[in-house]
Figure 1 (cartoon, protein in one colour):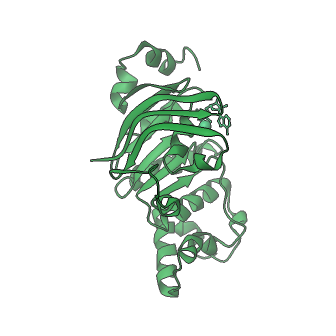
Figure 2 (spheres, rainbow, N blue to C red):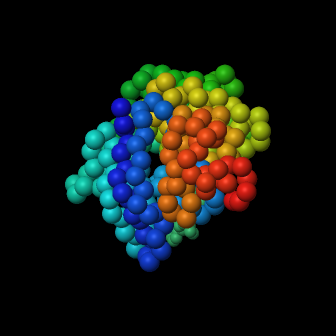
Figure 3 (tube, helix red, strand yellow):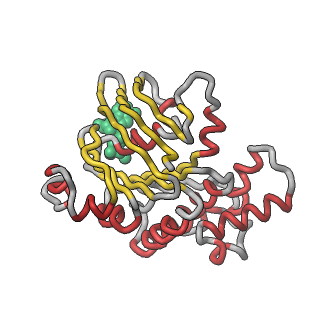
Amino acid sequence: MNIIEAKNIDFYYGDFHALKGVSLNVVKNNVTAFIGPSGCGKSTFLRLLNRMNDLIPDIKLSGECLINGENIYRKGIDVDVLRKKIGMVFQKPNPFPKSIFENIAYGLRVNGEKNKEFIRNRVEESLKGAALWEEVKDKLTRSAYDLSGGQQQRLCIARALAVKPDILLMDEPASALDPISTSKIEELIYNLKAEYTIVIVTHNMQQAARVSDSTGFFMLGELIEFSDTKKMFLNPDKEQTQNYITGRFG
Ligand SMILES: Nc1ncnc2c1ncn2[C@@H]1O[C@H](COP(=O)(O)OP(=O)(O)O)[C@@H](O)[C@H]1O
Ligand SMILES: [Mg+2]
C-alpha cells in the first residue's frame, strides 16, 4: 500500500526552481532512501512531506502530495495533527535542554497526556524502540546533554516515536556520528520498519544500499530514477544514475 503519493511536484524558493516535476510513491513499512549530490533537493522534498517548508517565506508549490490518501496541502488541513503523524529527525541531534525522561515525555505532555503511569510506560517503550533503554534506564533524570552524540540521536528518534507517528522522516541522521553509532542507527532503522514507514536522506550511498528497500536519485531538482534499491545499485536504468553510483561525479 502506498502511504505517500507525490504527483508532479514543482517547488520554488522565490524564483529558484528547487524541485521539478517530482512524482513518486512510498510503500508503507518500507524504508525509502533519497540520494544525490549536495543541493539537488533531497531535504526540500523531505520537508514537503510534513509541511516544514511552510515556515520559509516566498515559497511556491504545485502538484499533489497525498499521505494516507489525503492531500496534505488542501485548504483546512490541521498542520499540527499532520506533524504528529509524521515525525522528523535531523542531521545534528537536537535534544531539548531537559532530562532524558522529559525529552521523551514532552510530546505526550504537549498533547495533554496527564496519566503518569501512561507517560512512564510510553517513555520506556520509546527508548526501547530506539535501542537506548539499556544504556539510560538508570539515569533517566540526567540531562540529555550528558549523552554521547550517537545516544542523543537515538534519544531524538525515541522522542519522535513517543507520539506514535505513521512516518519517520530522517535527514542524514547519521552523518554527524562515528562509525559505531552510525551502524547502531542503521540497525535501528532496519528494525523500526516493522512498525513505521521511514524516509531517509543520506549522502552515503552504501548506507542507502544497506538500509533501504527503495531508492530515489535526485539531481538538480529532478528525480532521475526511483526504484527497488537492489536494482538501483546493480542495474540502474539511467546513465546518470550509473555515473553517480560508480562515483564518476558528485
Ligand atoms: N530556505 C531556502 N531558501 C532558498 N533556497 C534554498 C533554501 N533551502 C534550500 N535552498 C536551495 O534549494 C536547493 C536544494 O536544497 P536542499 O533541498 O537543501 O538540497 P539537498 O538536501 O539535496 O542538499 C539548493 O540549491 C539550496 O541552495
Ligand atoms: Mg539536505
